[in-house]
Length: 520
Image (cartoon, rainbow, N blue to C red; front, side, top):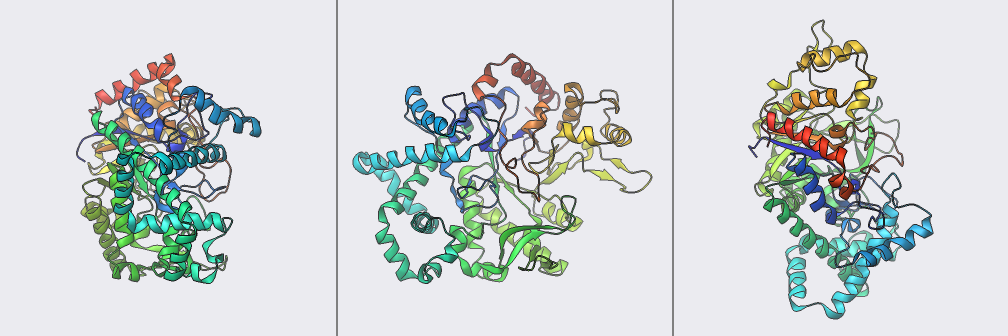
């Protein structure tokens, strides 16, 4: 993608609808309104977090039941009148005693409401589906057989065994034995078919939304998580591709002085290579069906994967161990992803403890890495240390104020000592617009930062939605377990934001910045 675009990063679950229509979690059906809203703000790209299905009680989209399936909680309740929608939502609200505008995502509510709808829709389809609908479903199931058959059986078995981990299932099923799978598919045929149908519904809805974006000259971005969770359909069906004795994590960094243990299974890179990285290729193909821009999370892990054993005191290590082998592996994997991405723009999250040669390698592969304005410095630790002017960012980069793992820009500004803020405004050449002693960071100061960032040569400038408005609520605090993580929602419904006078004024301000910086 060579256009200079402005984009907004927002999780799909964060979108909100009015009281009586809101199911507790944003979804596919909310994207047309989000598109209408952010086009008013001059932003033609909406960048989402993974849509991968997570288990009940879980929230992180980076640890999922499947990295290929769309989570059914994102399915739109299509074909319902406003009164029917209110009836679908209201009973669960009464039972929970929770108002529709609770401040965070309510996945439990969304899962209950959506599953009732989807079960009803499946029964309708089985009893009275039209010939056209049946033909489309059969075509979808055949085209996606390579992953859908295992996924749907996995979901049916999870319910059959009370959501226990697949490693606790009877041995033949645990081993993915062909005879056991055949018997289970026969026994659970209706449930398997239903989960296939749910994915078909999600895919049909997504296809229509994708067309809406294309018709508007806008773009959808998505995220490829580093790995499926250990308890996932893909690991269960491809156990030979993972070393289940080791777990992926991250070495010590600014987020954790002891490093992080993510609980994700360690890839067996040798076996993945022997299979021509077929699982990664499939993931890229599915992502390209859904998105124009594909973000690879934790790209350094494709070059060198940090893993730990079961001992919590054990020091982890990288695989491969030496730099030449790491570079060969990373570029080999990235070529496989690019070849399978069918022309979609591939970008990479290259933040944290990342060697300089990884960024050089990404550039050689024509993959844009990130430039987080608050982290881009020159001469660190020296007397002439300073922030880098975004004007010298490379075109092949993604300019941003932060990510889903950072505090919001206004909170970062508040936490900095005055000398650091002085260095920041000097580096961005905005000292005349933003006084270092100014507290808190108001709209004028925020816009000075945004304009300096948007003026960068970077093809993409993608800003977290909170930093467009100066909001303070973050999405995730790495290396922590908290109900606040992955629960951020817009403070008002999309409809209200489209009608609200203050939102209209903010739209005009941001559109002016986009126009002045040539990102229209």
